[in-house]
Length: 123
Ligand SMILES: Nc1ncnc2c1ncn2[C@@H]1O[C@H](COP(=O)(O)OP(=O)(O)OP(=O)(O)O)[C@@H](O)[C@H]1O
Ligand SMILES: [Mg+2]
View 1 (cartoon, protein in one colour):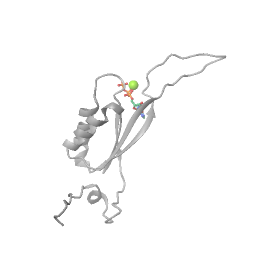
View 2: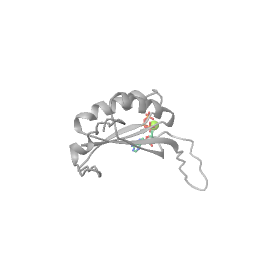
View 3: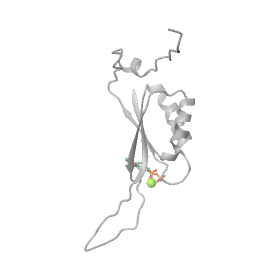
View 4: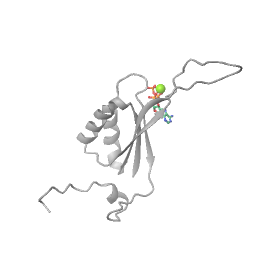
């Protein structure tokens, strides 16, 4: 399993979610974060050196997936998040040692595989 961590522009979140939905990626966590993308800002100096690092609002997505789903997930994020301007963000793919689904006790592969939706009345 892998954890796909993506930092994207807040105004691209809608498109990213749409692309992930279309790619049938399910199960994700989103947080509002602040980040710095390495751009050089004007540095003000006052009695020595001071470094100015402007932080900008970003959205962090965390998506746990099985290995064969990584490329699909990354492509969907790219599709939704890219504007072509600096600051579009980054995607990190991290190894995951263990996953548990709390409700069932399922582990690993079974725990990141989405459970089919049960519709009202079909129980
Ligand atoms: N190396 C990094 N580690 C952790 N977070 C990062 C890193 N680089 C960028 N980020 C996060 O991604 C956000 C957007 O970064 P940004 O898109 O500027 O990356 P970049 O690599 O500088 O690409 P670009 O050339 O398009 O500016 C940052 O505000 C920060 O939250
Ligand atoms: Mg940058």
